[in-house]
Length: 133
Image (cartoon, rainbow, N blue to C red; front, side, top):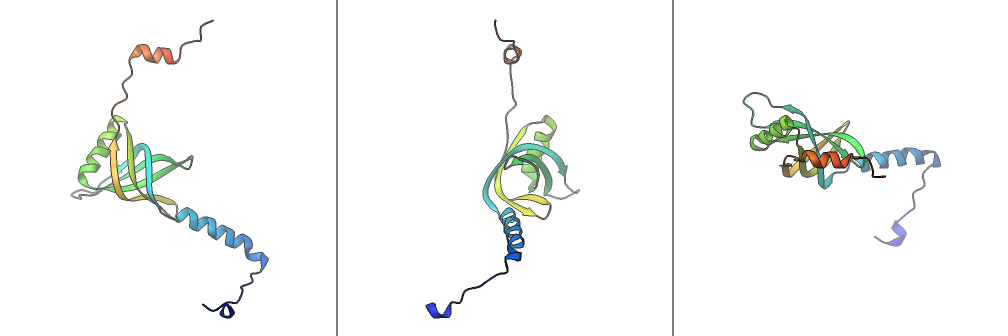
């Protein structure tokens, strides 16, 4: 573009706060293409005879507690049911998108259920033992 074709744009300073708020909102809604979420399955929903199940994952994003919604195929949904019933942690990797009040994970790359946390009784006691004097 020729330099003389460009003309500057001047905005009223009163619009600054509106533009900044719009910028923040758009940044929050921008997809995070490779987000890894670690949390617990809080909600399960699958209509009868449907192959896709919907879960709600309770997790943290940017140090804030969030509920993230995911649609899972039948096989992975069965793993989510298992994780929910055994209270195991789930790790999911995909694209996070803000949709209004909701946070949704799309384009699922992986979804794994953590192994059980097995601690011997003696070790638990040591974690909370009084310091020696």
